[in-house]
Image (cartoon, rainbow, N blue to C red; front, side):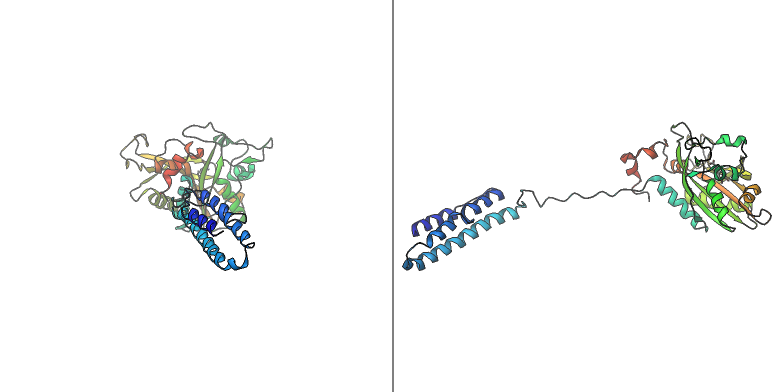
Length: 339
Ligand code: DAH
């Protein structure tokens, strides 16, 4: 038996494995319950007692050697970076890529921040509206031609359930609930039945503003919009107000800013005029105040509304409005550092 033990000891000394899997096979071959070493231990029970002392010693040494050898082989693979599956655990991990904010959200947040500095709070209203809040209370009588300015999506066949065509509807919701002073902006999504092109979409975003108090004047409106324009487009920005018409304001105006691209010298963005239109505004029509329960003898106010897509396109020189809604990662990735 001693000979067989020595023979096995020699065999074990020269064992080699080229994978963790092979090392495991060797462990099974020599050290598992039915392995070669264990078999010798079984046999050991049957030898004469006087030999047990000597043989037992050598057999125990063999077992230790076998264990050491197999562990050594296994460890070799662990330090090679290979786990039991053979995967290389030293390879660098895959990092998770963070998303970025959508350009429309970046600009909306910026607009909210600027007006917050002037004391404007933020409110919102429903996207699915009724005729009263979108049109009637804003001084659009039923047959008023100004309703043609807005191509409305109706829900089912009910003419009183519709998608809001502008965020001006939130003015009405706020005035119904709250007495002046009111100083708030309303960012939100609006819907119009328009053909989709590079310049128009059937879904877009607006920010509406409303300021109602005693003695609010057109000069307040002008100064508020000048401050806003300089903050958003840079300190050199100039504004210009052109007379216009909206049913809910009187007088009404459209506001242009000096072209932020060419600084007013003329380029293809401002169509060589030096100016670009960015919003509509005016003094809230007394009929609008009265329709929502505000005394127009005591209070006056101004309102304004702007398209977020349009402003974002100007700010980042984006030529096609459809890019905002396509979720093309190559487009969105360009705004990673814009916040
Ligand atoms: N609601 C208008 C639109 O969608 C924008 C607008 C113009 C809002 C003048 C106003 C305003 O509050 O005073 O085109």
